[in-house]
Image (cartoon, rainbow, N blue to C red; front, side, top):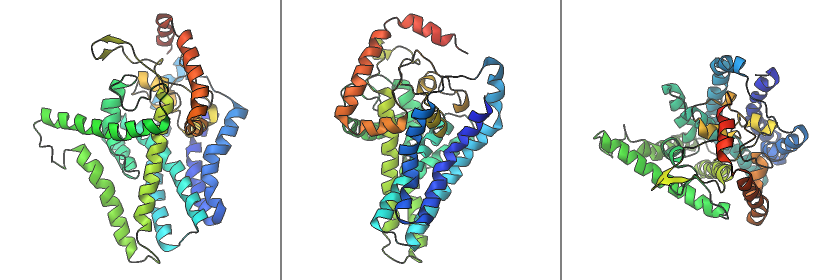
Amino acid sequence: MKLIKKIGFLGAFIVPFLVVIGYYGGGFWNFSAFFFAYIFVPICDEIIGRDKSNVSAANYEATLENKYFEILVHSLVYVQLGIVIWALCMLAWYPLSWVAYIGFLLSIMSFTSNGINIAHELGHKKSYIARFNAKLNLMTTCYMHFYVEHNRGHHVHVATPLDPATSKKNQTFYAFWVQTVFGSFKSAWKIEKERLAKKNIPFYSIVENEMLRAILFPLLFISIITLVLSFQMNYFVYIVPLFFFLQSVMAFSSLEAVNYIEHYGMTRREIASNKYERVNPLHSWNSSHLISNLMLLQLQRHSDHHAYASRPYQVLRHFDESPQLPFGYPVMIMIALVPPLWFKIMNKKLENWQKLAIDEVQIRHSIESTV
């Protein structure tokens, strides 16, 4: 991997840095991290362009085993935990104006929403520490059930009617939000209930039931913090849990906007009743815009991730054959919020790509021959 790209992944730390700098700058400076993520990064994407390079076969093993990439992603978990606790303390001790509060909230969300991506990366690893850190990160956005549903639900049913996190053609983001937020939670309950039943473990076991912990741990976390800070607060105690839950909803809504973008209109062929063809890089939208990919640890190379879920972020590949988004995720999220604009851009791209992808056998052969 090129040194410049290796260093570029450190860009994920820019947003939390700007959150802190913006807060101490005061007032409108609190929007700094948000503007960086949703204005500056897209501008850089358009200026610098796309990166279609893949790690070579000769460098693949060395890149895969390089601890630098693992340390980077694990450290972001504790940066996020620290930022969230620090933010709640600041709100408890020093009241903000409404403008500063909104800016602070948007900037925190810009970081914690990417934190769900960090948890997503770690949740696919086998080590206990990685999975513990994945759940810890999800706790700070009240989305711990994502660990259950994403790995054992979404990856199994993606691009089929069985997956609540796959958006349909002509479905607005707002309709999809209801489908995926409530549908994924329901799916996670079902998955966990079936897992425990197979092991003859009582469903009410907090020690074993991932879903009970997914509900209780965020509530316990914010309750302890609110209780501790209540003795030192200079104004209303509700501001701490209110901010925590607001940034959580905004963070997981941003995640679901990404799900909406990644799988819009994608379908797998049904080869038997409720049985579908194997997932491959044709079943997810891809984006290889360099700067946003560095900030998001190559989440936008989503086609490869779904075909090979255990492949770490540093070696994810670009495929020309995969359906390509016109912009990086930050811009696509903003477009998704305006359904008429989204449909105008994406329905045409979806239909054009479907016409080009008729010869799927040849496309699959090209993809599978890539190292």
